[in-house]
Image (tube, rainbow, N blue to C red; front, side, top):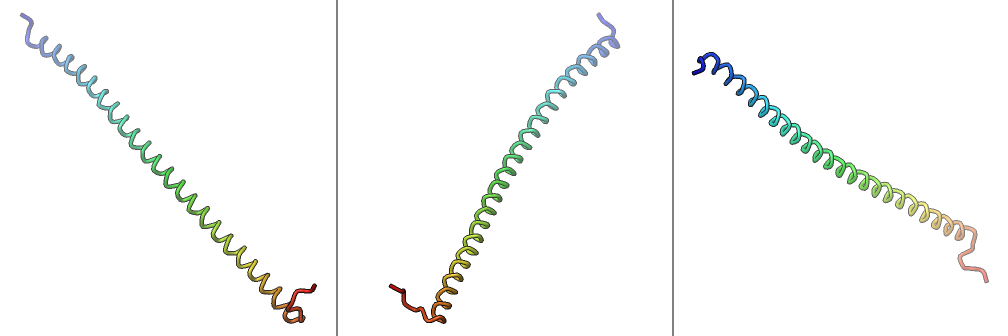
Length: 93
């Protein structure tokens, strides 16, 4: 029969090897889970950024439409006022 000290030493080595293997597997799993979480967060951030960009583009388009519309209305109103002041209320034939 082997001496107790030798059995303890061998069992300790086996346990250390097993613990190291399990620890590496656990570390890999944690790393993969963290990576997946970061990827999901990154995708969500990209979606939010896309939504912000499209919202900003719509706001800009709306502002441009308002400015252009207001400019066109102002130009037409100015023409009408000038025509009235100059006595040209009817179209000439």
